[in-house]
Picture (cartoon, rainbow over the protein chains, first blue to last red):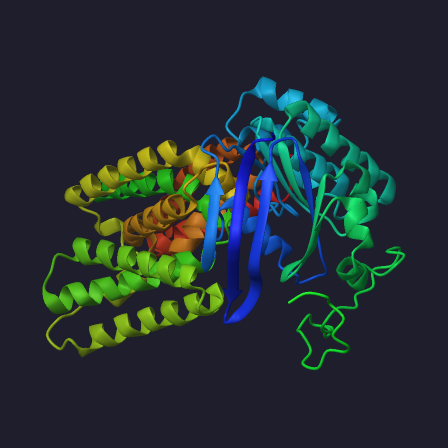
Amino acid sequence: MAKLLVALDKVNKSFAGKLVLENVSIQLKQGEITTLIGPNGAGKSTLVRIVLGLLKPDSGTIKRTADLKVGYMPQKLVIDPTLPISTCRFLQLANTSHQACHEALESVGIAHLAATPIQELSGGEVQRALLARAVLRKPNLLVLDEPVQGVDVNGQNALYRMISDLAKTLSCGVLMVSHDLHLVMSATDQVVCLNRHICCHGHPEQVTQDPAYLDIFGQTTALYSHHHDHDHSLHGDVLGDGHEEDCDHG
Amino acid sequence: MADFLIYALLAGLGVALVAGPLGCFVVWRRMAYFGDTLAHSALLGVSLGVMLDINLSVTVTAVPLIMALGLVYLEQRGVLALDTLLGILSHSALAAGLVVISLLPDVRVDLMSLLFGDLLAVTKSDLWVIYGLSAVVLALLALLWQQLINITVDPELAAVEGTNVALVRTALMLITALVIALAMKVVGVLLITALLIIPAATARRLARTPEQMAVAASIIAMVTVVMGLAMSWYTDAPAGPSVVICAAFLFSVSLCRRQST
C-alpha cells in the first residue's frame, strides 16, 4: 500500500468570520497524483497553504509523515526588478549546489536560461523555473498551485507532461490545483472537487459522472460554467438567494 | 587636518559601510517608508531621553527598536494596510517628538542637528559606538544573508523550504532600526532613508548579483560621504544634506549607464 504522506481530517478554516473550508478531509499518498479542482474562491489555495503548513486551520487535525519533504510551486513569482538575481541563483536559494541547479534546469528544459535574470523570463519559463526549484530538493511531496497559469495551451500540455514525468522519476506524491480537469485527467489518480466543502472525490472517470461535479463544471466542461447551490457576484461574493438546491450533499 | 574633520569622516564611513547592504534590502523589499517611520521615531527617542534625563544614545536606539517590533506585530495582525499603518506611526512619532521637545522649557535642543545631522560634532566615543554597532550589523547581515535574500525573493517558498520567515524578518527590522539610530548622527532624522536608498539604487545599475549590489552600494555610500564632507567643508553647507546631494548626483550620473543585467 502506498505510504500516507499527509492526512487532513475535518479541517475548518475561516477568514474574518467567513467560512472558507468546511470539514475538509483529504489524504495524500506517495506516488499518487491528487488534483484539486473547484471554482474561484472555493478555498483551493487555502487548502494548499494548510497542507504546506503556511496556514493553521481553526479546527481539525493534520498529520504529516516524519520524513516529509515538500517541493512547492507557487501560483506566481513576483520579484522586485531592483533585485539582481539570475535564474540559477534563484534555484540555489533552495540551498543546493550549482551542479544540482543546472541539472534541475536541464530537466525542465531551460538550462540555457541559467544566467538570465529571473525577471526577464517569460510566463512559461518562470513556471518551469519554479518547477525546477520545487523538484530540486528531491521532495516526496510536490505541491503545485495552478502550475500552468499564464501558459499557452501547447505549453500547458508540455508542462503537465513534464510534471507527471518528474513525479514518476521522484516517485513522490503530488497535490495539484487545476482549473481544467481535461488536461490533467489522464495523469490524475484522485480528483478532489472543492467548493468550500468537498463536493465529491475519487477517480477522474468516477468524478466526472458525479452530479456534484456536473453541477459545478457542466456536462461538457469545455466552458467553465458554474451552477452550484449559490451564485457569485462579479466580485466573488456569495450572493444570498441561490437558485435551486441541486447539490446532492449536506 | 582638524580632529573633528577626521572624526566626521570616520563616522560617516562607518555608517556608509552598513548603509550599503542594508539599503539594498530597503530597496528590494520596498521598505523606504518603514525606514522613515523608524527615523521619525528616533526623534521621539531624543525627546524622551531629554525629558527623562536618560543617556540619549540609549533612547535613540531603544525607541526605533521598540517601534520596529511594534510594526512587526501590527503587520502580522493585518489590521490595516502597511503603508497606512506606517503613515500613522511615522508622523505621530515625528509630531510627538517635536511637541515633547518644545514642552521642555529649560532644555535647549538643537533641532536642526537632529533633523539634518551633525556630523562635524562627532566625538571619539561616538566613533566607538558607530564602529561597534556597525560590526554587529555586518556580522548579522553576513550570518543571515542567504535567508534574507530567500525571504525577499519569495517568503512562502522560503517558509516551505524550512526558513523561519518571521524570525528572519524581525531580525531585519531590528537591524534596520539599529542602523537608523546610527545614521541619525550623520544625516539626521529626515535624510536617513536617502542615505539607505540612493546608494543602493545607484548600485543596482552596476550589479548582476545581490552581493555585487550590496558591496557596490557600500562603496558608493562611502564615496558619497567623502564628497559630501568636502562639499560641506568648502561651502559651509550642513554636512548631512551635502552628503545626500552628492548621493543624488552620483545616482543621476549612473543613469547614463545602461543597466547591467
